[in-house]
Image (cartoon, rainbow, N blue to C red):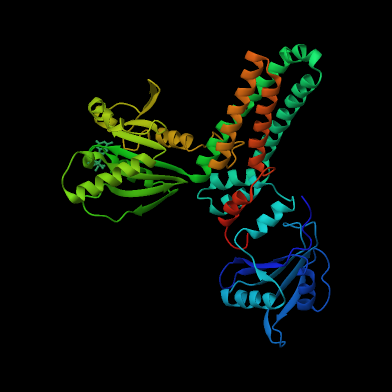
Length: 450
Ligand code: GDP
């Protein structure tokens, strides 16, 4: 990418930490150093914090603070960047912003700083998106994952795979260019082995990115079950954890969605399936619609039942989309005097617990965290977006097509073309290949000043 040194200078309030806090006005562009000079009365030294009296055009004092110049290309955007640190009052920050606009800056669009950093090659698209995800992160785990993506862990894995694909493509294209040796070249076991190994690596990346999306977006859990199964008790027991934020959902008395909690990034909504029965009552019909919508959107459905009722209750999960993960809770084990445990039966996870005594809640929490993409110690978990998962899935299809073309037809040209598509799909993730449309959509989601 070319260095965008002649970019018009943009300005934004980066942080407004309220009265008493620090507020930052950030400028980026080729005219930023001249603006700093005007405000400071002399040229600022690179990366040096100067104490500065910020004044209006007529010399009246606006505030006193710091001014720092980060010369291009060693700045966040890759352009000349000037930071003005002032008191965090929104009034002062607005006045300072007006002052730099008077000096020739224009207000930045949302995400424009990150967009410039991307266009100037300082960060790739995954890293830019990680900045937005970090700001929006709803849990500590999500924030940590976003920092890993920002550090380039996800990008490095994508790039390493893209390089492996390029090597395979070069190999195959060399075989095509020397047709007399083509058969031998393409029949080399090593080539197929490398292709298969690359498929495996892509599968690993796909699984990790899916986890990354759940980490970034949070997990939407719906608790279902008949009245009196203990759904509210279970939700309350989970909400009692100091990691939970409890919100009451307003609604009618027959509203099925009684409440929702946010447990360290895992949003949980309670759906009482009493309302899922057929009804002609207007309020109940509306409640049923909301319950069904809620279930359809769930990543994970937790059925609360008991040993005795389970067979009767299992059909409650029957209408769920195939992609929804299911978990069965056998509640009220205290009544039978049995111990908490978990088991997998026919591919379904079952947990025996008591919402009343709290026994076995830790097993449920562990299962929820696992479903949310948290690994044991969250080692290596990075944030990702649906866009990335879609691209990896496309890359995977093309890679498998390349493998089939080689294995079954020895069709070198076809395989090379499929590998080119793999490379393209992977390049879309980091932004090596990107349309203006996509960039517009990504950066429009940012907040101003980032
Ligand atoms: P919901 O209608 O599914 O929300 O069920 P509730 O949470 O309101 O619970 C229904 C009844 O079962 C209440 O009297 C609870 O105290 C009781 N209950 C819930 N969980 C347990 C449990 O683990 N053990 C026992 N013994 N009673 C429970």
